[in-house]
Image 1: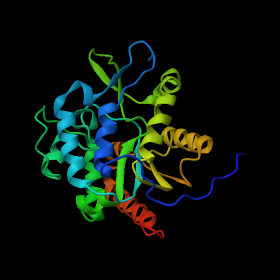
Image 2: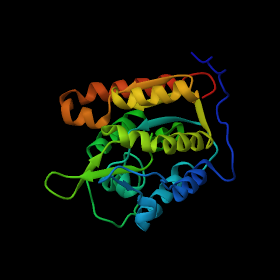
Image 3: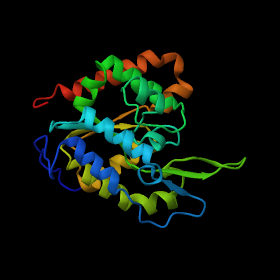
Length: 252
């Protein structure tokens, strides 16, 4: 077992500009140079849709116009109706407009179930200003994937749904994680959304690369909305408790 690296001080930053400008530059530069399995397509809203880049840039300039260190929350990969449209993880067009006050997105309206839960957690945490002051959300793969649907068209595809896809994009995910940590991420704890395959994958990467002192898995928002909606209050409170515990650590 490799030795555990010493705890790093929070807020290690590189590059010019605010936290938000570093995120915007990262989004502009995102490109996946990997041979994907047949039928799998990578979604890159920042290159495919001017609305996504404009809307996400407005979002990061509103909430991340500073140099504060933040904790990282990692999902799986963006879906077609949330971050795949707006460029903001776990934020569908409705939440972007109504909750964040960002009207730069001009594309089709859409409803993303995970966004509903995440913004309920944000409300209970104290609202958008408080939440985004303390946390930065993305996914272990900042770009999403689609596969052919059984009835035609495309459906969302998680990176871990196919071993060959996961293997093909692992170097990309490791590089993206390193680059995002350099925005000014406090690496003492990472919250991972998904108790199963995503948590195992993130924990495996962390064991190999020592990104974080610890990884804290929570149930994925989509799972909660789809299978545990009657217990939404309890899950939202569980999230808020976990978020407050990591922000109460000394130095945050």
